[in-house]
Amino acid sequence: MDDLWTTARAALGSNRQIALRAGAALLAGAGVFALRHIPRAEVDVAIVPRRKIARIRTLAEALADLRVLESHDAEFASHFEKVLDAVDAFLLEDERRVVASQGRMSRLAGTVERIAAEMCAHAEEQMHVSDDAFVAVLRARDEVVPRIVGMLEDMLWNHLLERG
Image 1 (cartoon, rainbow, N blue to C red):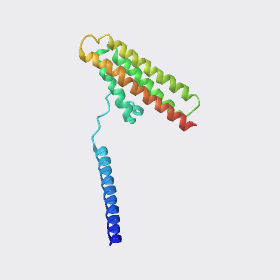
Image 2: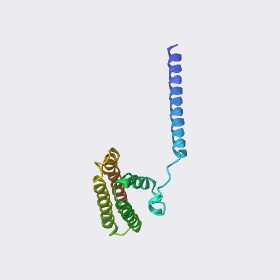
Image 3: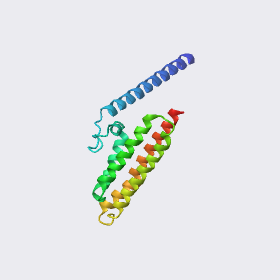
Image 4: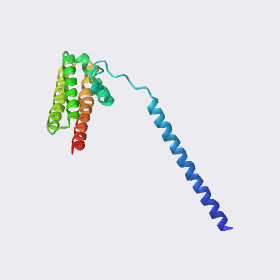
């Protein structure tokens, strides 16, 4: 009789395991399906002509987040174009795969960081005007710029790993 109960418990336990695994697989599949079908935001109009940047969706979205400074930096358009030019040149160097590319990419990432810091400095002059300006500058300086620089540094590391 004890053997019968032991066998029944083992069968029930394995069926429970199968059901739990099937449920987990179903949830994971539904999650992947949902992520693929959630509409994504359009790429910023200033970034669309820059196809290399626009192809890297997360980088394009991070660069578009610099727009938070647009109404607070009088020279925003020229600064933003310089940032986009530097990122374009960075991506071009990434494609070249020559020894000198890593140094150029590092300098270009530094250029992006420097120009973005200038954008924040220009906008900081307007920080006292309103709470929106204050929040915009803090967000750009503390969140957006480090995220962009981090992405460029990750791309540089990937470039080094692929070349080596």
